[in-house]
Structures are given as C-alpha cells and as structure tokens.
Length: 237
Image (cartoon, rainbow, N blue to C red; front, side):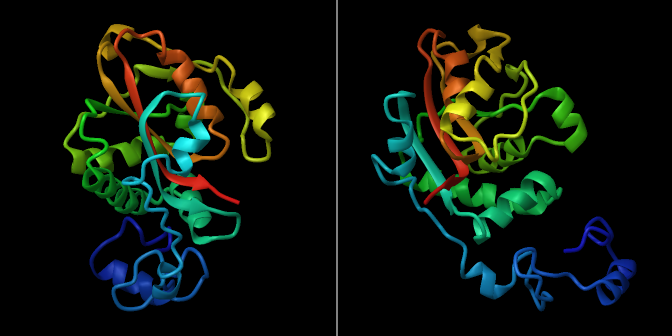
C-alpha cells in the first residue's frame, strides 16, 4: 500500500488507489485483488527459516557459548536483496505496521506450535534509545512483541530493559566492531521485576548476535533469570 493511502478509508481511499495504485514493496509490481504489500510472486519467494521446532538450529548455534538460551528461533532467512531484507526494511524504516503485525503473528504461531517456548513468562523487546524512538516514532521490536503476545498470551514488558547509550547504525560493521559499538549499551532499571522469570527477548534481525549478547550482559546477574530469543529474521550467507 502506498504511504498516502495507508491511513485513509472509504471512497477517498478507492480514488487514491486509482490515482496511486498500491505496489509490491519488493518488486514494484502493481498489486491486484487481495494482494497486500507483497505480490503473489514475491510472497512465494519469502525465505522461511522454520527454526522454532528445531533444536540446535542456526540461531542457537550462533549464540552458543555467548548466551545460555533455553531456545532461540527466527522466522526468515535474511540475505541482501532478498524478500526478507525488504520486509525488515519496511517494518523498521517505512512505518509498515501492518507487516509488523502480520509477520509477528506468524512468528508467534511458530513459537507456539513448537512447544519449546511454553515456559516463557514475558516478552521483552530489544530497546531503542529514546532519541531514536522519537525520530522513528516506534520501536519495531516492540511492534513484533505485541503481535507475538497476541498469540502466546504473555505480557510485553517495556521500559525495564533500556538502552542507555545512543549508538550508530550496525549495518556495515563486522562482528568485532559491532561488539565494540554495543558494549555497555543496555541496563535494567528494576532487576527484581525479572527475578526467577523466563524472558523471551525479541529483535527484528540477528546478524552477528552482538546486540542480543549485550542485552544479556545487562540481564545475566539477575537471580533465577532464564532467556529465550526470537527474531523476525536471521542473517544468512
């Protein structure tokens, strides 16, 4: 859906669709019928990871020895230029709340069906710095959390795990640079709120795992805390 008509309904919306037809966010083809955001052809190219039910999967291996995860999973495999990259970009930068809800629900359904995330007590988004959230208008990880929570029926806890330092983009950094960039970025305001809890930590994309590892660094001294991890996508290849 184009940005102009996304929040408009009724006859005006129909007129805008005629003048400014909705196009596929990946290939740019005009959407027809029931197509929304992605055309049928691009939808068939979505690189599903299907990792939730798989023990020792790609995400768990990437975090092994760094975070003692109860379980970890991603919905999509991310490669530069593929449909997953477009979806992450749409959710993260293009204010596409509908895609965040749609794919967050799909991720939640996979987590639920796997049975491996049944012990989760609450869902926690990787936080944005307040200045970045103010600029963007939302935290994409929190949007995913809300959608996942609608499936798992678990509370979403925001503003306890916080980002205390503003960081530059991780996009073009290698693993060591990402670790340096994320060092001591996160903090927990009320550790007792997470005592003896099993947290599901949610991010939009896992690349090297540096962000997830540094979130855990802020959490790991909390008594009785257990952690699982989920993301919309995991970088692959």
